[in-house]
Image (cartoon, rainbow, N blue to C red):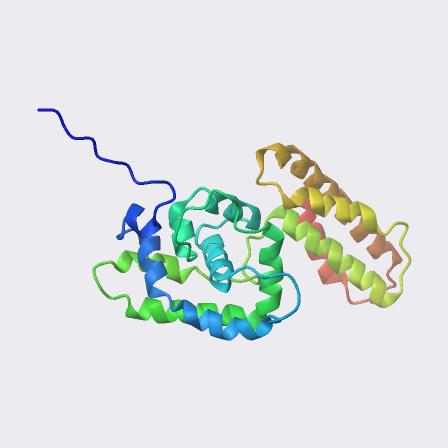
Length: 247
């Protein structure tokens, strides 16, 4: 007996018809009260002027996915264009192969909603977590790590060296100490090269930038120690910087 051909769903048919309703992201998307974010963040936008903004649910969803999957802004935007569950989670009705936004727009959105906005996202996550007592409790793993905002970060060498540079420059400025070189433009280029390290083509450039940043951090620490007077009170801080740089 010849089997009848089963028509395949169209790429542009409804996502609800294509996806598994028991997938964790599908379940999580239907439990979050997205209206809370709309009501809280809508007043932060101008209703009449400026370029039309991206939907609030889209931006909140991207931020949540970024932290759930431990992705960079660039990676979550790229993967969103390839993942139907990501798109359903962010409120899309049909699959869209294009990018949802520029990665820089996530930075602007975080600044727009501020700390209070991120706390609102966390409170909604906690609410969903408390309600999730059924057999699908495995979804709570997504909730627990959703909004670990900017104060929670992995202490990579590059990040530590960047903090050392910024702290040394801050001390130099506050004390009015001289510097042979401020490295202003050099540091801008280094930070730019480090930013897109997750892309395979930029990996080598990012590693070179990391080494360059470590070298600059060491020079600044040594120069600051030379220029400081005795009993300056920065010995413990400089010792810490030198230990980090020697690792």
